[in-house]
Amino acid sequence: MNIQGSDRKAGTLLLLVMSNLLFCQNVHPLPICHSGNCQMTLQELFDRVIMLSHYVYMMSADMFIEFEKRYAQDHEFIAKAINDCPTSSLATPEDKEEAQQVPPEVLLNLILSLVHSWNGPLFQLVTEVDGIHEASDAIISRAKEIGEQNKRLLEGIEKILGQAYPEAKGNEIYSVWSQFPSLQGIDEESRDLALYNKIRCLRRDSHKVDNYLKLLRCRIVHNNNC
Image 1: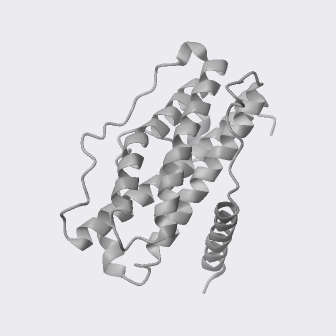
Image 2 (image 1 turned 90 degrees about the vertical axis):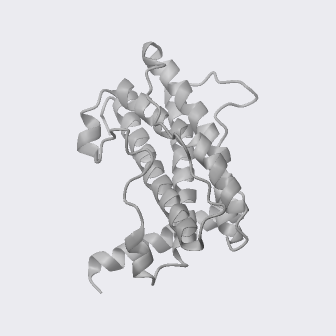
């Protein structure tokens, strides 16, 4: 095994251990607002939202790992997985260099669009996963947790946008999920492929949101001095 492959496996194991510790100990990020009081600085808002976005990413990555365990050795199944995500219609920067070229207020609205676009699908994903008796308790629990925390994340990003760029609020473009297909009444392989792809896409998008927010904190709060 090469060093790069070993590092990747070590990183995946570390992520799994950390997320399980957080989940088992019921450790949650701080609420965006305490008792409705949101009189906090922009840096405080960013800190709380980034903590929450990282938590959502860890949960989605952990859920993907749990689901993938069943198919790790099934190369045919992995090969059949769809590469495109339902949010692929949103033009998102693929790396830090691309993201730095996007004006901060535009990137914030893009983050808002990504998070908002997952609200409905997450609700249905929780319903579908909960109805599959073969799904592990870990997958079901994380799906429910991500759905709850995604709403809080949306609230926090809206507050950042309203405080930093109030004139840009309302310019977000939501991805069109014309129909989030039901997983009931289809054959087992098609159902599992659909679930695999949705969870993989969720992990990808939540990772992007986490990275974009960290970049924006550096740009907006610290004037790129970080």
